[in-house]
Amino acid sequence: MGNQHKLGSMLRHLILMSVSIVFAFPFVWMIFGCFKTNNEIWQEPYKLIPSHFDFVRLFENLRGIHFEGYAWNSIFVGTVGSALMVGVALLFSYAIVFMETKRTKWLFWIVMGTYMLPSAVTYVPAYVILAKFRLLDSLGGLIFSNLASVFAVFWLRQSLLKMDKGYVEAAYMDGASHMEIIRHVVFPLNRSAIFTVFVLTFVQQYNSYMWPSIMLKSQDKYLISQGLRQFFIQDGAYGMNWSQVMLASTVAILPIIVIFMLTQKWFITGIKEESGTK
Image 1 (cartoon, rainbow, N blue to C red):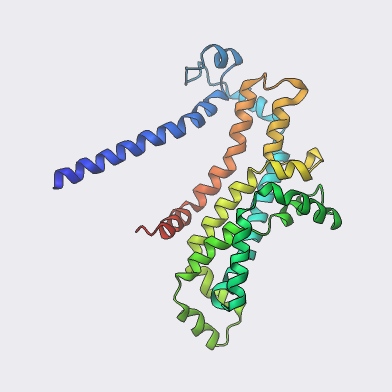
Image 2 (image 1 turned 90 degrees about the vertical axis):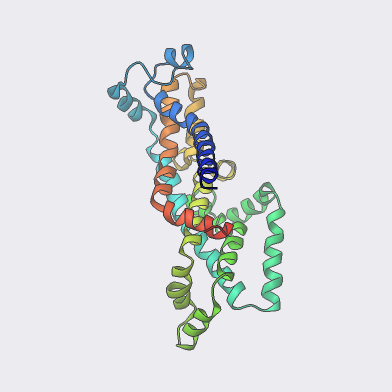
């Protein structure tokens, strides 16, 4: 039995390593592509390692792509928008779980019913609302339009349902307000779920393309996905300088990697808790 268990464990790890290599290969090829010339990319696409690591040309290309503004816009929208959205979802989930009435149950199922609507259906009414508030073509308007998230409400509600309500009742009996209960009881006990929602939402808002393309018209307010497209098609070049395209793509994914590395402990814990694994 011991040998069979070891063999099964080795087989699982081998499969996971193989799948990881398959998924990681395009990113590794992209990073090495930053150092390649156009001829190397076109004539030897199967060659992973570049013939020469020219860091001087790399930094020259980095200064030439002018991606700082796009990256800052995406990081700002992703960070601030995700934090505010998680706050709104946590307040709503708290009310649904710990202030439960017949009306709150109906409200929750109405909100969940909107999850079945295609996102494109909301573009026109959201555009009209932002126009009336004079928030079009602004990062603030983009953040405001993403404050509501059915996914975040569902995930946080599931996490709050697993809590022992005795903690909340004891804090309430001691005179704590709802905001104090959320801050000192709910947040510490659901930190993993909250960080998981934050990371997933950050990735979604950081990479968002369709809705920002509709409401953002000024190029200095573009997110990184719009900036990447603008860079790719500028002057009708369609990515003629492929080393710069690879560099721009690498710059675009770096903040996501950093965010995941900083929050991976809580992110992985949150995924395990929701899946029921130990």
